[in-house]
Amino acid sequence: MKKKITLLILLISVIGLTTGCAPETGTMTCTMTTYPIDGITIRSIYKATYKNNIVTKLKTVEKIISEDKDNLKTYQEKIEELYSGYQGIKYYNNAIKIKEDTLTSTTTIQYDKVDTEKLIEVDSDNASLIKNGKVPIDDLEKLYKQNGCNCKKEG
Image (cartoon, rainbow, N blue to C red; front, side, top):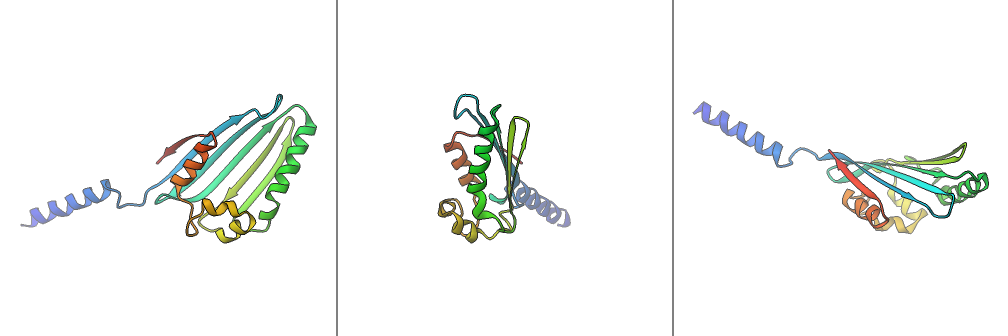
């Protein structure tokens, strides 16, 4: 009898582990390269960390490559303007640097901690992605793919 109970508990444990009772965690990396005008290349990498299919952190690295320094300055001004409304929001960070012929814009959002209502206040388009204060990984993947990214999930 003890042996049957032990086998039953073991079987239930194995089924629980293989059917997803444990939290699903992983990362999704999406990439895209565009050439908006002659002489400019934009390489974007979006890396989302998720748990139970909800994004916990998103890191975006966009590199704009141009030998024309004026183009880089123009992009810098536009990016600063785009992110200006997010300044001061805890757990949302954007940094821009120019080195040689490359402007790098790095944005990190800790979605499991940030006040998502403030993100929606800054840009109402954020409401299409944020549902009940959370960002579903499948919705983020769909958005990136619609914009031309190649995405890969791991984990």
